[in-house]
Image (cartoon, rainbow, N blue to C red; front, top):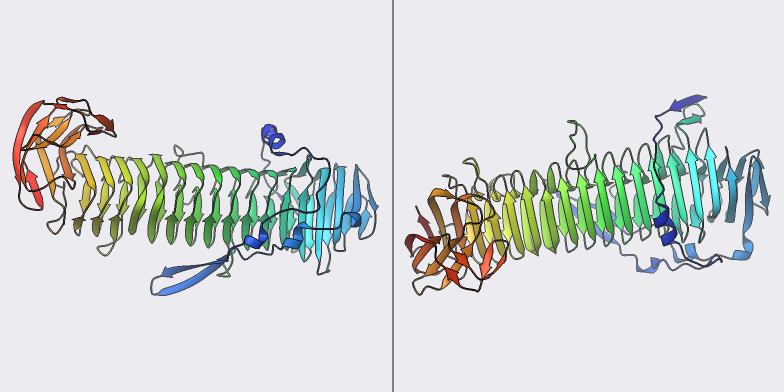
Length: 579
């Protein structure tokens, strides 16, 4: 025999209010559950790795079947746990002291408590084992309280209006050459959890809930406290709903099979999630796909914490792609908020993000097609070799670059729409290749140092549409659009630094307002482009006041009362510089 010891994790509270709020009021156990399993969507994710294209993760192809949620209540075998003894009413299970072994497929309702015992599922039958947990409280001092050693498929049902507890210690005893089970709720095969009750797992040895095959959570109120990973589906993790709280010293939710290209994925259809993890919050070897959910994620102690060189504490991480269709995301992470080794695609959703590094990062491309994204704090905001923004309301506050198309001269940044407000200590828009803007609004409160500029590109900046205004320090690095642009732009370098909030105003020869802008930081330069900027003569005023409606420093309508006339200039070329 060999004994393993790990440190004990202390936990405070069980979120009982959330547990009782989630529960229903019926006393009867339903034998039919609507899981919408017939609506499962199978999606092939294709990623590019250099010259190779790899198809990974048939996302949504799980072990779940409609019949999983339908059974004959009259066939239930009742197992009663009574502290230091166990009784079985029916066939299919045997008792040895405080250990009960289920050796046949079927439906088993378990109730009561064990101070030091175990429920084992070990069957070669090719049918399903259902475990109905009815006010279960099992502690095991030398192993997993619930060990599904062998089964075709096991379904754990949380009976309505019940709270069920599984607790282990930091001391697991194994036969020689064995290192499993390694979770308080462990399954060597496919596992499904659902119900209108609650499950609290205190895992002091390793993981909280682990399936070495696929894990489907269809519903339930689940709290996991673990000294390593919280909830793990090795081949895949599909969460269809529920209220899930995870406190983990490792990863929060994970699928980590990186040996098979069709595994290692996470699909979240719905649910409410409160995840606190020392390492990554949600992490998959291949793909993370979020259809909807309400997420509160804190990793690595939050964005103000420091990490070691080899530490990882990302909010949502994938070895392949991350696709977010919708949801509410509050992520505070010491590392990147959202990080994909390939692509990040956001369709819509509401995001409040704070990070100690990058907020949204992809090694290949970031594509944003909608949503409300508020990056409250970060080193860099959105970073990838290629960035495409087509829609959405995006507010970015960073100490370094806000939107960075980093890589080489072949990379690009496309802004085709959306409403983007940037406050950056580094570059506002930065591309090692090209930038192209065809629509949308971009407002930049840029850097106040010579080493950075509000807009920085190594290739070209095609300003072909949209509204752009950016304030900066007035360094030699400041740039407007390229001469090949369809839309006119102007770069104004002021002789003295102006205070934040001091109006910068441009009007045409008919005294019609073209721009009234109050930068949110001290400024010495302005870059401006809009469809209203045409060939002709313009006046620049500094200071003054406006009765217009202000949004993010830009005034619309109203009357401008002139301050000091600074300069007049004429637009004849696509790019005009005023010194």
